[in-house]
Amino acid sequence: MDNVRHRVTRHRRRGEGGFTLIELLVVIAILSVLAAIVIINVTGVKGTAQTASCKSDTEAVQTAVDGYYVANGLYPDASGDTPSPNAGEGVNISELLTGTNPYLQASPATGESFTYANTTGTIQGSVTLQGASSGTVCQTG
Figure (tube, rainbow, N blue to C red):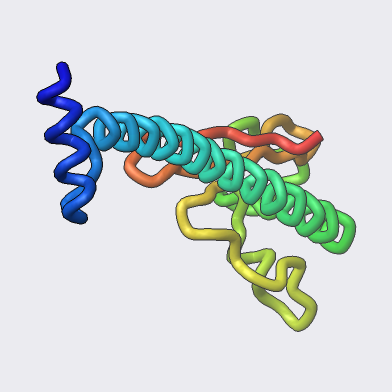
């Protein structure tokens, strides 16, 4: 035991001190845990942001659809304007973007689509997440 203590003391006196293997492993373990926490939190934020964006776009499209209906008495339907669109029928976004006073100022994000939820013109939005095959549905309200 005295021999080991003598070696450690001797190395530190010469300025050859350093970190032990145990100290390095503890630091690596702490950094790994912190990295895992950050990665988990960042991936959750992206999904939350996409859902919030979809809801915001859905509200904007709903307002535009309502304005179009008030002006024309019909809903902008993908298969042709109609007074009561079928549930699941797509919203014709291009009609909302055209004219001298467009109902939408800008097109929603690429990958987002909007369909009618019922025959009263209430819509729901969906967004296809990057790398996902099915869309995530978001509704306002």
